[in-house]
Image (cartoon, rainbow, N blue to C red):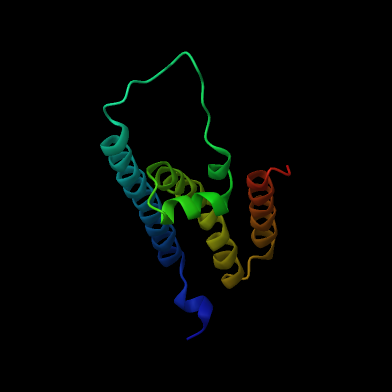
Length: 127
C-alpha cells in the first residue's frame, strides 16, 4: 500500500474537519479561561470609557503573549487564545499543502503554497 492509497479524499477531509474543530475549540477554551480569570481579578472595577487604552506593548508580540500566558496573566491568556484562533486556518492551509503533495497534485501544491505564503506575510505585517 502506497502513501497515496492510505490518504484518500475522505480521510483528508476528516483530518481537516477535525483540525478546524480542535483548533477553534481549543482557542475558545483558552479565551474562556482567560476571560474568567480576568473577571475574577477585575470584574468589580469600573470601566472608564472616556480614555481608550489599547493592549500593552508586551502583548503585541508572540513572545510577549506566550510569556504573559505562562505567567498566568489573564490578558495574556486571552491573547494566546486569539493567536490560536488565527493559527487554526493557517494550519489548515499548511496541511492542505501536505495533502496535495501526497496526491501528487503539483498545481494545487503551488497555489496552496502561494496562499500560505500570503497568510504568513500578512500575519508578519509584511504584506
